[in-house]
Length: 251
Image (tube, rainbow, N blue to C red; front, side):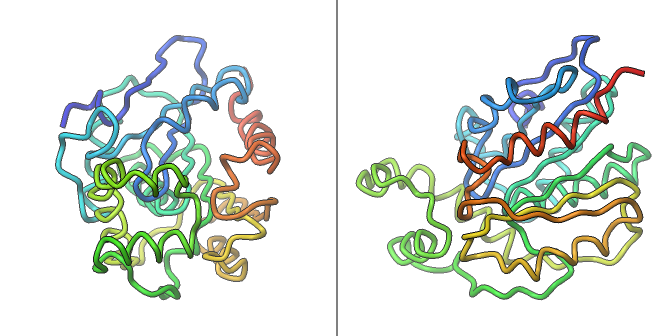
C-alpha cells in the first residue's frame, strides 16, 4: 500500500518540531483528526494514520492482525524525513499506537510521548465478550450498545453501514486476537486516559499502563463516554495541548 494512503496529511516544514501520529478507534479513519491541528501548540503537526479499507483507501483489503497494521505504519513512517514523534491512539488505536511505539523504540527512534485513550492496559486479560464473529445485525447492535458512537443516520442507512463493516470487523478481529508479548519497557512518558461514563473501559484497568514504561506515567478520566476525545466539552484537547507543549518547545 502506498505510504501516502497510510499518512494522508504530512507537514514536513522546518517549523514542525514534533509530529503527532494519531490512530483512530476500530473502523475509524483519518478524518476526525484533521480538525485537531488548530488546537495543538505551535510546532506540532497532526499526522493521522489511515489503516486500509477506509476513506480514500477503501479499495485496499483490510488488515486483520495488529502485527500487519504496525508493519504498514512503520513502512509509511520510515518513508518520511526523521522528526521527533509523539503517538496518540484511541480505543483500538491505543493498542496500535503502543505497538508502534515499541517498534519505533526497537528501531532506535523512541517516541517523545505515548498517549493512549479508552483502552485497558494490553497486558491484562480481555474482559469483554468477543464480537467480531457475530452476524452483521447482532454485531452492530452489540457494538452500539457497548460503545455507542454509531450515528443514528448511519444506522438508518444499511448501504452506508455495509461499506464500513469490513474495516470495523477487521479491526475488532485484530483487537480480539491480540496477545501481549513481554519485552523491554518503553523509554518515553506515557499518559493513559478514559471517559468517566465509558461503559466499555473500567478505570481500574487503565492504571496498569504505568507498568509498561520506565518514564513518567499519569492517568486521567474526562467527562463523556467512549468517544469523549471527539466531544468539545470533554477538555481532552486542552489537556493534550498541555502535554505536547513542552515536547514542541524550541531549543
